Length: 478
Image (tube, rainbow, N blue to C red):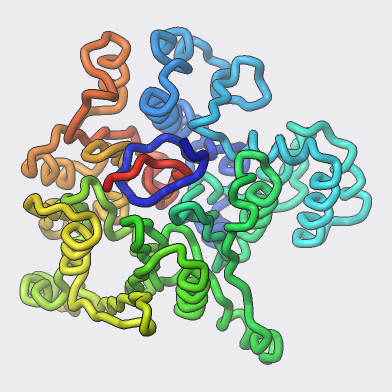
């Protein structure tokens, strides 16, 4: 079996990269929260112990069960949480549920890479030469933590944290047997992008990708622009705006984080290398509410999608939103532009879609060859005002572990009701783990189920389970 290959959003997940909430998250202060792309400060220990730890255990039960099966009582009884800490001998270290920090530590053990990466980070963060030398003398695991959290072992902050690294989806996307690298829109994510690049180009896990990594770059004209215009004309692309929905079909969102110029460049590079035959551009409103396309829709099965109703059939939605007018406001519907580019022998052909639901229907029918009845599950059960409220807390941002089984947040009650109305079961992550331990249920036989993850603090970080995952290996669905 290949180490790296993703050709869909719903094929059985076999390997992914995650990053557990680190101490840098606990150092986000209100005055810098928005600069660091957070809406609020979070309580780190609650996020870790009461929420994200269950995410890790669920992932391990599905992808690497020998790490947790029959051991949950022992793991939960350890108040030091050594099972989750990469520096500890009891750490779960898995080659299927892969922690970003361990990948970074692995490449920092390579002297040449270590020297280059320290120099690169210090240049980006404008560190003094003295600090650069101090970093060079550190132990590998300590150095990895400093480069991620920005904090020295003596608790001195050397540079800002990179709290968005928990959203590993944004650092890159596997497109069949290639990798499309992130080029972040915000300076706050520059260091995480740099660390990811060094990992992808140097870690043995990605050896098969060495000649298959695609990078979006600035063209020479960008550097000739006046300095005050350069920032607004950057080519930027983030993984939350990229979805591998079928073996020959990639979606790219144009949003507040991904530019149309970067999308065009990605299309050219993908077609030139014959990686896919079809790329669809989805231009969504450039609003913080949406951020990426995976905040407004994700796929649960070949024929099941969860989405924000007001962005599903925009024209029809205009007639349904009279409530806003009664409140003296403009209707909440927005404009979408959807263009599909198809690489054919006689050139690239372009096809337009009127709305998101027609595009998703086409993917199900034409790309995945699925002719079952298509189901659209709407955020908040498409009820005012719950559609918008629950979309804000990631009701549309689910990670499919296999066809029909996905992880969502427990706070999105009306969306959970919509799933149940569509024939899905919903179960709390804590209860599911106990049933796995008692052999009442098993990952292999679980079907049509939405796993509800505790999410009071996680949801405040503005990203769901889809954001918190970078799948690098899935089974094919067709």
